[in-house]
View 1 (spheres, rainbow, N blue to C red):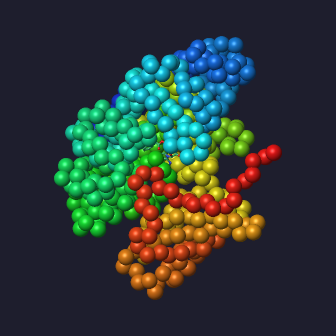
View 2 (tube, rainbow, N blue to C red; view 1 turned 90 degrees about the horizontal axis):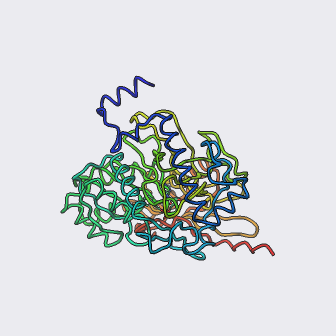
View 3 (spheres, helix red, strand yellow; view 1 turned 45 degrees about the horizontal axis):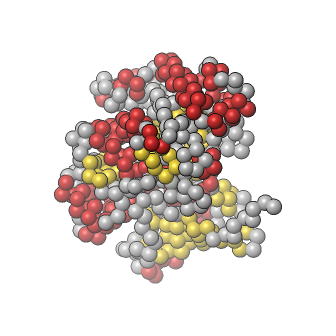
Length: 450
Ligand code: DLL
């Protein structure tokens, strides 16, 4: 193991990352830094947000300084998304809104949006971490960054933008949409880095093919894809169609935005930037901490966020942590690919399924295009799943039935559910310009408890 690590380091040169002084910091000083920052974060929350103070008091704290070790983190109560909604809009901020530099918000399709705020220092930290992520993915100063993440209240666009600027990379602020124009500008401006959701990257690839443009001949070298779950099969598909190295990037607005974690050149999990966040995995049912390597819900604590400190925030994202040394030389924890969110998990006739598992089976199957949608219905007392997939243009409609049977068979044997597969003509399934909507749940909503 050590030999491999050293060989790889020798190969990469001595520099580990954009911020080598922290990215390769040994565990002991890293944990000392974390404890100092956690104590300061707790004081900030205690001093400025009555809600935090009351909850900490209920958990047995008489003052913020009662937290003496990283292990004491376990004594803090968990936070959930509705805590932000219940204090809409600014109730959990540590400062008056006039002292902030920016606000973002979730779309809030159900109920109130979740509002997050940043001080100028918070925005600077975010730019640093996004620049660090871009660098870890393989972007370098001077690379033209084509940014197709949506600009606006969504954190993807501005987050990637500020990170590219901090890296010293010229950024093209495209946002999502106008896909034909995206293709033209990628080619004309010589973009080397593409930032987009994986589903939108695929939509760009498809439009390029329809325009007769071969993106594999473009200057694109690296893609930073995230904001939605995606599979290894999708990674291979996007790499083959665009001709770049596809890297997974993770983040969420409640914690910061994109750049909370990102893959490095080893692509063996996403490095969670532990000088700014603490990562835990808990059992989603009991809330108990799980050992490294076990799958559960990711819980994140911010260490340096000024405006909106988040203490043990339940992300709903399902993953595992790995702390064995990474070949790249970074010491920060690796968060394995997020397979889906707790709330996206479907329980189909007793089998737990994430849409990304279906994707892993479908994408790359001969004759089938990487566009799909799951439709859930209730037939009597039972859940019924139909799966709409698209045929590749080269497939004759007469073969759709055979393709459907083949896909249904593989889903049954690899995922364990029976799905009614409908193979549809090319272009039938809506393309995403941001986060793809993979599931149409038509089941009757559960009645609220009396
Ligand atoms: O999606 C921030 C972001 C923008 C991340 C661009 C990466 C790239 P939210 O809109 O708050 O923020 O959504 C956060 O998206 O809790 C996950 O469920 C999901 N998600 C984000 N990145 C990944 C990923 C942005 N790489 C929610 N893999 C998170 C799987 C992801 N799911």
